[in-house]
Image (cartoon, rainbow, N blue to C red; front, side, top):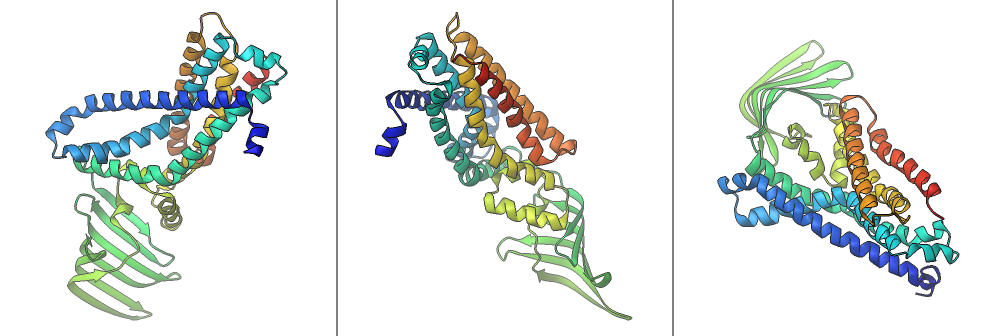
Length: 364
């Protein structure tokens, strides 16, 4: 406590309490608004579907609320900072602080202490908690709202350095692949090739079943054929690997996502950009808390005629610009060949530069 009291003074506690109090209040308002709008949009689906009230409340909204609050938390934080700082400026609370000998950098200290708490919570949620709540929301959406998906066709997967899989199509609804083949190589020489009419996932045994299969074994000039009606086999792949829905990546936790990326490096099925984009977003986007806090303080610390309306309006406009920039960067990563790490850094880099310029020009 002596260490804390040495660096955090009474005015710091005052600003920290206002910061966190306004942030929590704004978070609650956005929660209510988001839920009301979502219910009005999906009410027909809820009433016409087979999901129970308990499933809607605890499964769907148990995943919906954490996901959107975490996604919007930097912007909610931005609006909260602008609102209470502009109110302090309007009530002439900032001028005495700066006139009392405190530098603008010293004035920023409590803001960054409070934003650090939000940053830590956001980082923990991004890596560990949000993927689990997203799993609830994703399972509900895919089961009760948009469970029908198109079958994936012409699937090519490299399981390891010597094994290659091909399927003419894979049906996500019944976890079944058709016109299946498995080739195993030793260097450049093929050693065996399995062909089957159909392959299906056994969720109880956690194995694959192949039907009407033929295996061709090659040993130099010697070959032999083995045929059968049904056979269990263990392969390093799961139905999730063939899921065509985009929302499955957000439901992977830290370890599952890294494991999926390592497998994708071998398989090359074309989803590496999606996986890396999801991974880097979880690490980089929480830093926006600092960037937007700096911009918010620099924008709203000057007392202006008209009260808090003008700074708040500018803050909301910049929030939309920030979201728009994020979406543009994501599209360029997915469709334009922009490296995912660059795509997630660009919004913070641009707005961070704006924040530095505004802080330099802010009233001292």
